[in-house]
Length: 96
Image (cartoon, rainbow, N blue to C red; front, side, top):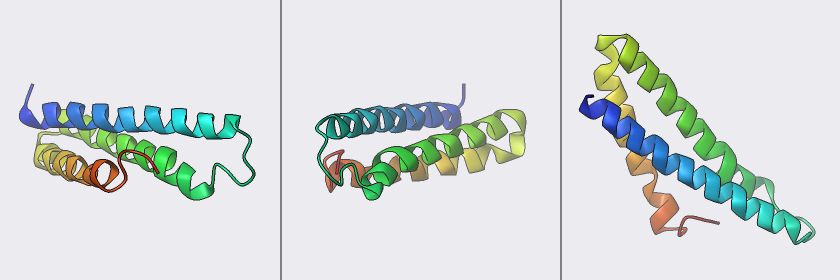
């Protein structure tokens, strides 16, 4: 297993945890039946964004495994998505 594969697995795990916690947060808000919540921005930030990143990582992980030339691209995508997780933790505390 190469470094690019390990970085991709770590990134998918972190983004998967964000997706899982985001889903739990939105289910909790919906259970309170507050009018106007959950908002579309919350759904985008907590569900659609992480799901898109996970899909991107899995596509490039598959391409990196299938084609040797895309291994550097897989490594770059994994590093960029690991850096993109910082706003979720530093600025927003993992939630909205």
